[in-house]
Amino acid sequence: MKEQARFWRHPALPRVDLLHARYVTHRYARHTHEEFAIGVIVAGVEEFACRGSTYRAGTGQLVVVSPEYEHTGQAGVPEGWAYRMMYPPVETISESGTPYFGDPVIEDPALAGLLLRTHAAAEHGDDLAASTLMRTFAAELVSRHASPRPPREAAAGSQEVRQAVELLHERLVEPPSLEGLAEAVRSAPFPLLRAFKAATGLPPHAYLTTLRVREARRLLAAGMPAARVAAEVGFTDQAHLTRHFKRIVGVPPAAYQRAAGTYKTH
Image (cartoon, rainbow, N blue to C red; front, side, top):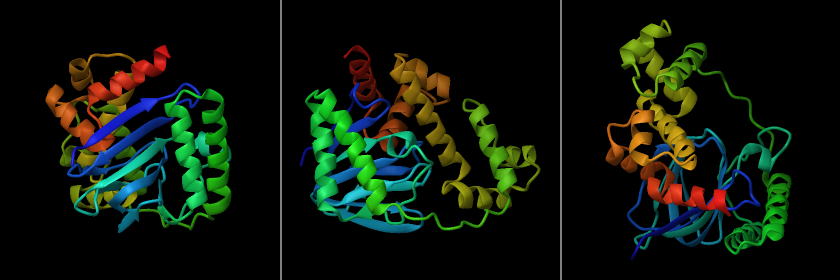
């Protein structure tokens, strides 16, 4: 079965990326988003790891992954899965902080239908309907399914982890080795690795790849050529960028840039 993916933006939904895709063999690498990842499965089953557990979402179910939660994604059945996703920033979902959702798979047919109508309105260029439905969906999602955030124990070495994260942000192109990173934050390699993964869900090298792809998205949206983007964010070449970009975003850089360009000139 052929895989298809369309990534786009709509001016009525500021900073909200939209994805309509069918995947069979595609597998998302473990990664995080700055935004929410919210979608509805329209066919098949998606299987994904998130917060140390494995989940399966089937036709009609909602998937809600909160910002900075590490997760994967792959087919849960041989025929794969199709879904409609949106990636809204926190302030689009709630103006009073980041809401917490205890279960990333939600059974709510009415809310799933509302998301599909929001997607369709954006796809067909209905500005008023798209913006109205988006706000309605966000309010309903939070009121029906958000819950109090459970207290989290601070990860061991959290100060060192914060410093390590800051250093990776600063050194996208020339990152230190694990030993160099540990030395810079006055830790030892293995304790830092363990604390870093406990705090972020990812080892430092995978976290760095996520940071690079995030910056690549911003540069591509600004119109920078992909080959230059690869060099600017620290990938070896354009092919290296394309491989990691697709494993995290779901579409190659060229398709993402076309979508961003359409948004700008709409």
